[in-house]
Image (cartoon, rainbow over all chains, first blue to last red):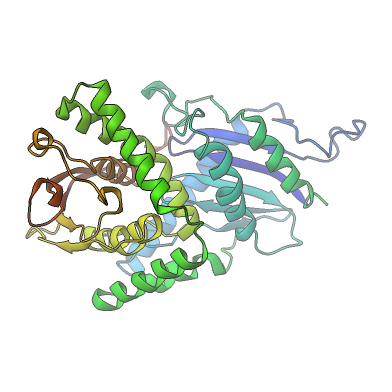
Length: 167
Length: 211
């Protein structure tokens, strides 16, 4: 079961979000087929999520320096709570791909890597008239940007891909 | 909270952290060769050479053989490719950031050049503080069949797009570098050499309020 999916760019901005939250809109037959955006009516959630991962990641970087000099590959991979698991993948360019799921499956790193290499690369990176950097000026950096990926091909392909994992 | 065990995708990244010197060099060689063989769709070489040739030719026409402007334009086209190509590269390799320029030079030559152009430039002429090095292009697929006209020989860097690609790609992994040709066999020089100089490592942004 997948609850939500997020992408953050190197400017700490959320550039994509989709939620498949059960319960809040069970009357809507389309609730499962197409993800909702920000169903909790709280745009702080994305910022809080990023903030938590950012802080945890800085802590692990500090811990790894005390263990050895090598900081390679000591990023957060997943975080678990009593109810769900947060899977994360960071690229060397500073993008974060984040998937929130239930406990059924341990490891979603293949899924995150597939989204990056087959969906994000094709529909955003190889699409030259779409921006690759969503913050146009310093006012949109450091988590203050609001621009999102609104490319139809990207959204449709991603939703179709995640669809199979919803239940 | 718990951290999950390492994934198969990034095990090579973990492997690589334990390797140094010659071992690391061998590792990247095999790694790059493997990706070239198994994960890359090949294109017709002649079509590739002609596509690049026609770009340079069109620029010569547009800028009335002002070679300085042509160099600049090739560089900026390369930059626009580089900032995107780096994501493609990372998606294929899943490599983490390099801790020093020595590893950066290994990844550029044995993995990046291998994967995208099927050549492996030689790394040479390190500065004493190990932040500047040269890439010697023994082969250059862009320049095959090319013979520069006499007036272009002193000014045109025919393959300048490569410098732009490197600039854009490195900048996206927070390495601010100066990159440029210092010699080219097309100009009658003994070798084709690109100089890469690290200016500074850019800082990752942190969310407002976290500092």
